[in-house]
Every structure is written in structure tokens, then in C-alpha cells.
Image 1 (cartoon, rainbow, N blue to C red):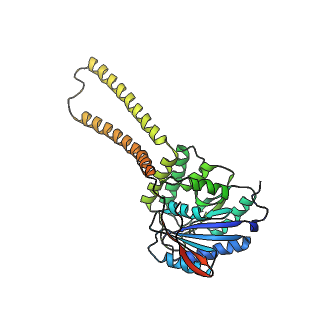
Image 2: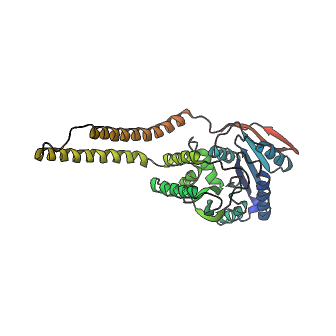
Image 3: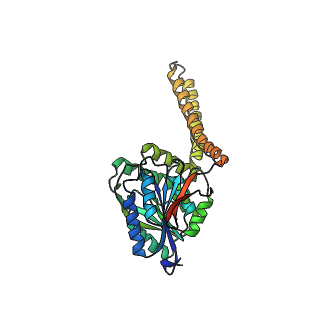
Length: 330
């Protein structure tokens, strides 16, 4: 079933989180505007400044002062990529909403293909990377490993080699807006919602300007959030590990008794075996406590019900002038 007979009767919202992207933001907006002009659709561009430390806010405000379709959401501090995406989704008014990073690694021109898929009836059109230019072999390997591991550990059908670059129908966006868990994994949440989701293959480009915002430490933390948000398999692995250790201990104990009966002097008294045993079981216990602690920590943070982000101002043109207004906190 098609969502729209003519896209011009609908509004397309483009949500772009920005963190230290002053160098590439004008080019990003230019290319997005070119795509929207090609499509001939009414649109809005929401630039979410996630506590940038360079001139990103000033550049974004300058762009908004010259174009009434641009809104700038300035967060009070850096809340992280997923929170910035959520802030944009909460304010987006389009019948279809596109999530795209402003670093131009995800080409805005792909939006046209996503819109075509949406018009053909897709609830979600997600970008799937055929290639990733300008990235190290280590990052490519860890990315592939992450997606395969995630699919193996979770029940959600999260497509491999995808990011948050996607177009979503309004009904999917409304469901996402109702999901307020603090540790967010947007692409997994979209997969959980369901509906008709189709892939749009594309080639990812090198950054237009600036540096990556996802070094290894952040990538690892993001992977932990993704797995613990959508799977309890790690907890079950602890149970299986404990049962395996118990079984091995019983077998080893029986073996020691048998050997002792037939050769009382076989074992040389000493501490190495005792120390190894203590260290092994201590490691198993610490691993179990660590995994359980990850889940308990997430429950604790969710129980505090703090806002996912805080908006300082939302800037947009009113009567031909750029003004800032406070946004209602969801």
C-alpha cells in the first residue's frame, strides 16, 4: 500500500545531529536542499547541535537565518549521538522523517531512493553499506563482527552493515517517540517496531571535514548498550558457564579420587593447583557479577526517569527574523 500518491502533499523532515561539524555543515545543507528540490517536496531540516565545541552552532544559526525551512535545536550540553537523534525526532513534523549524520559520509542523494521506497509502501527504508571508504581495516573488521554478534544474540532482525541513516514513516516515528529508555540503540529500536522495512544499498564516503566522533572506546560502549538493550543472552551465558564449571569440577573431583585410590603418591603437594583453581573461579564470579551489574545499572538509570536531553533553545525564522524559543521538554 502506497503512503502517498504525490509527495508534494506531504512534508519530509530531515534530522541531522551535529557535533563539531562546522567545516562541512554548509555543504551538507546545500546537498540536502538539492535533493529536496529534485523531489519537489515541502520539507524541513532540523540541525541538532549536540554540545559542539567548535563553531557549529554559529554556522547552523547563519544557515537558519537565510533559510526558513531550517530549524536549529541547541542542546544544553553534549548528550551523545543517540540522544541528539531523539531530540530531532521529537520535534520533526514530517510525514516521513530521514535520519542522517551531517558529516556527509552518508550521501544525501540516497534520500531520493529512500523516498521512492517509501512512496511504494515501505514503512522504513534503511541505508545498507556496500562499501566504506576511508576507514581502517580494524574498524571494518570490528563493525562486521559487531553486527554478526548482535544478530546472533538478539531476537530482533537488525540488518547487518547499517547505521542510523534511514527514512521512517510517521507512524514508526510516533512509536519511537513513545520509547524513552535511557540507553538507546535507534537502529535496533526501529527494527523492533517492525512494519515493511526495505534496504537501500549505497557506498559510504570518507568524512567531508573534521574527525570521527566514534573512537574505539565509544564504539565499545555503544556495542555494550546495543547488546544489553536487546538481549538477555549474556545473562544466560553466565548460567551456562556456571553449569559447565560445576560439571568440570565434578569430573575433575572424580578423577582425583580414582587416581588417588590406584596411586596414592601420584600428586605432589603444592600450591599451584590451588592458586589456579582460586583464580579461575574468582574470574568466573567476577564475570558473572560484571554482566549482572550492567543490567542492574541500566535498570537503576531507567528508574530515575531523567530526561534524555535538555534543549537550550530551538532557533527558527519567525516573521523573517531568526529567533530562539524554549522547547517543551518531553
